[in-house]
Image 1 (cartoon, one colour):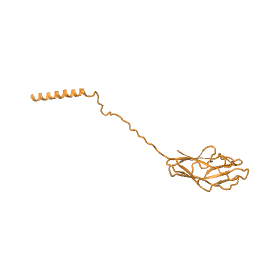
Image 2: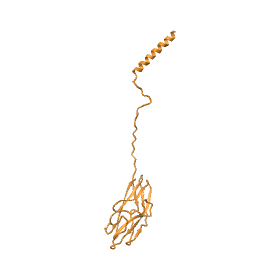
Image 3: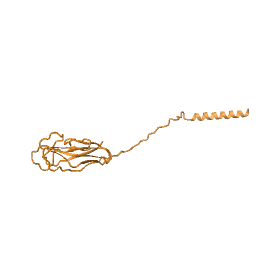
Image 4: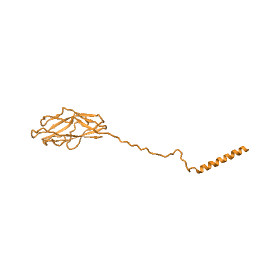
Length: 178
């Protein structure tokens, strides 16, 4: 009997200690529902638009009024950047001397008018006229670095009022990310 009483005494002491410890513990312990945190990721994607057209000039030479002449040189649009880009062209409204006016719509040419269009190429808008008042999208998506598209130029001349001196016009290119 003495041994059992000792065990009961130790059991009761242990139980009292457990109750005291429990009384001073936090009122609730959450198991499995820990705190949350956020990991913020920052990055700066970089890409460059860099295009050019080659060759940079072309001379059609002597052309008779009321004719069409296709360039013998093939032109190439280059994407030297790292992301896809579009290529947009716009030409001057008049030649350097002002003797001739651009008809960017490509319709019937009036006296002293000319038009230029893209032809026989791999560009997306083959056959389009290069506008003189608004942008003409020549290539809507030139893939990333190293991609190219080719084309020729066709010059159309209307009726002339005089034997004009050599005429020069300019095509301005704009490249943008797509």
